[in-house]
Image 1 (tube, rainbow, N blue to C red):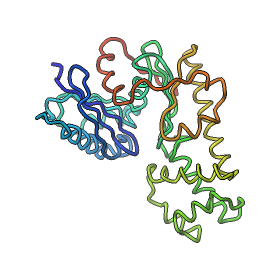
Image 2 (tube, rainbow, N blue to C red):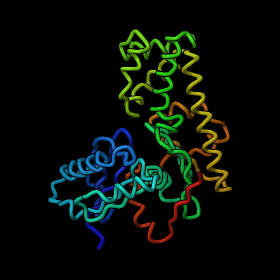
Image 3 (cartoon, rainbow, N blue to C red):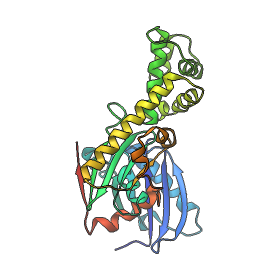
Length: 299
């Protein structure tokens, strides 16, 4: 039975956003909670989703029990089958819980449920193309081995440069000085200790330092950001080639405004503004999966 209320979730490595709608699509409220990456911490992700859902319901004057709410969560890590399977074994109070990747939710939202390509460069990074009823995914392998051009990647690269500058392997720069000042360290071992427990979110908080240094003319920062832009250009071209057609392109995430000026001109000509956000995309999904939906992983 279709529930009277639905909550769309956009869960990433930094925060979890919730959108509450009634059965007619009327927006009733929005709320945020903590990180929701089901691959790195499934229990934390479920806790964040619960918190966001309770918060968004609390904004209304309606007595809506969670057991009467359908939730569709687009969450980081759901592109990994084992992570998704494990997450779905966790207890929850909802009438229904549907889980898709945050990239798929964002793509459906950005293109209003129509065909298109989406590049995400926020705390993490990934790309997906929705074409002929199917998704083709590239990237999204996680911070430890991927997430090039993400905020976490840029923050970690900045720390690596600061260490190399400490050792006089690379010349000291505005970027290395800013990292050292931010972390309040004076030796390389102190720096290592300072970041020893850093999560992707924590590394991502260093990204604005690199951006500011680039804007001040730091060639090291410019080189790192140019490297990220080159990766995003190649990722986008690969996704477009997989569909063999010219699809509209959306680039979203906190790092998007930093990289977009540096991507190739031909790709800029395909750029469109997102129609809806990822929470809407998550809500779109249940109505689409019953008709014609498949997921193709191009690895």
